[in-house]
Length: 260
Image 1 (tube, rainbow, N blue to C red):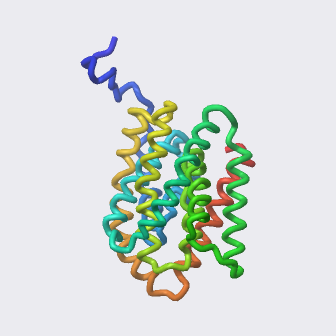
Image 2 (cartoon, helix red, strand yellow; image 1 turned 30 degrees about the horizontal axis):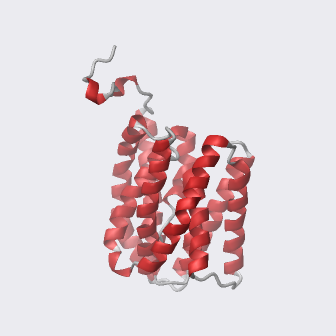
Image 3 (cartoon, helix red, strand yellow; image 1 turned 60 degrees about the horizontal axis):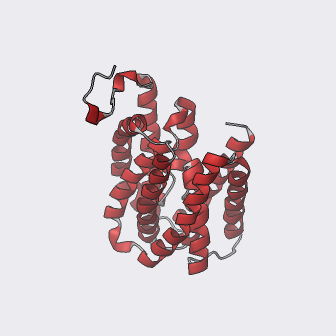
């Protein structure tokens, strides 16, 4: 028998599974470090946090991690709002919508492994190609394609930053951070809505998300200093974008091949 009023729909936190306090503390530290990375480079919270959170509690990914990403992107968009490339955000979001639809369909109908490995491989190749001098510019066509891949991977694997980040790697640091997080702000809402629609984000995931917020706030505060330091280093931001992008691609490949 539900002890709570009907309008709460049996909102009973005591019946949920909760990570132990040590695991919660570890998750907050992980999120804080990931938030520092994203606040400095423009993305990277999911890249750093997803594999570690999966070890602590698999259900922290993708839903709670996506909501934590939303909170961080809201803060970063406000901080870097004057440098956002609004046209770039628009076209990347146009591409993201069908990518989210594809990612949602794969989660409900098919095993996403092969497609995730394919896109992860493309990200690694893209990072290697641009490191060797190949030019990837934020043109309309490239933004549409990057948005699609980002939407698919963001929904299926909670890692959607690298495809768009690679297009902006040569831009000013504030423009990179502002544009990427403006894009993620809307994109994370779309992905969360898709997860909710297929029953992969509910009350318990919302409560777990709240546990991660202190780490987001702490990492955001620290990133104000690290972002300025990184911007002062010649080629430092571009190198960081390439390293984080390649690492994310390798992670999703390894996770699928190892059956994690």
